[in-house]
Length: 484
Ligand code: ARG
Ligand code: ZN
Image 1 (cartoon, rainbow, N blue to C red):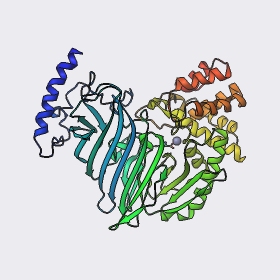
Image 2: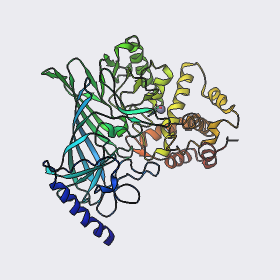
Image 3: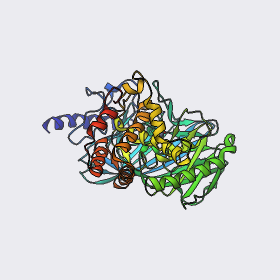
Image 4: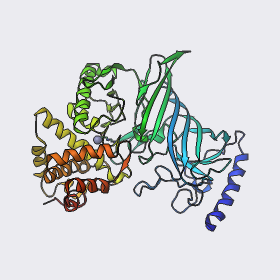
């Protein structure tokens, strides 16, 4: 306590000094690489100091220490974005409603790139600074623990997507010839809005996007009203009222052909494809509907108010389960991939992970869903698929990588998918079909719209089966060798 007090005073002084410099009340943007000169730099961890009444610069994920932020919980993002594909210029105003989980004299948001012109907290101009992807905000009046507050950030610039040198490829807000491909897993939301960019903090979203007339802007959930055109620009307003993690938020923009309606089971459905994929619009729409209806029977009621999918003309090398509207990067998805992305609506989107190391709870389940889809269609069985993978030699890399602890440098390793899926099949064989499918439904309903850990899944499986399953989960999820 005494230590933080001593720390906070000079920081406040520095903030106020800097606040006087530029005319708009904001300090000048920190030149990159000069973190030590920034009021938010200088701690040994490379991020701003935390503790006391200063919100931590990370939400506490041991593998992604600067992702997300501590000290508050976002309840709603109101994002207003203007985007011009020809110049790639993005103008944004983000109004974020949050609740302080501790007393806060200062807190951070994650934002990569852009020039921030203005930050306002509860109608009072705040002082702010930038260091790397951290936007540090000093409200004029400190926030009390449990207080609700609103922070409004105005920013503009050309988006810089994340180009990962390992195996994540390019992600975030990615400019394309006719608009943008926006897929943000794991931490690319910060490339288009100031965020508490970590799956542990879920919030509702309103996304309003203004684009040149003739261009379509897509986001999660439902459209609010009709798009409005004025002065050669069209504004689309989308609303996702169910809690959503930041990496699932999208503002995919471009020329699209659209098909809307309802699935046979009565769920609203929305499919959109870049004109290059116009031949795939009907199959995307139809298969997505069929899959959503089937998963609703197997996994429990569909958690959101619409389903669907989007194919954009950007060769991402992956698809992403964007909430209500999975996004396929430059390819026509087969049934198996559609089954995978829509399974994520339950596993990952509605039931989300608290920490990235538990990613198998998303990817293992979505992979197992592919096998269940094959079983449903009669093209294969989960057991045959399981045996095919189990026949892999003991030297195969999936046995060396324990899927229960996804590695930050290799998050989407094949083991997290395939061995994660195999874990579920091994579990199904151990507890029987009835208990297994009851477990899946209980899992999705107990944690609907929430955040989970592997331990919670193991505990529920043990409770429902009455069996000690620790040896099974340990062998499949945590050992760097092929299970016996
Ligand atoms: N969750 C996606 C899927 O398997 C994969 C996302 C990969 N993200 C990335 N930046 N490469 O459905
Ligand atoms: Zn997946």
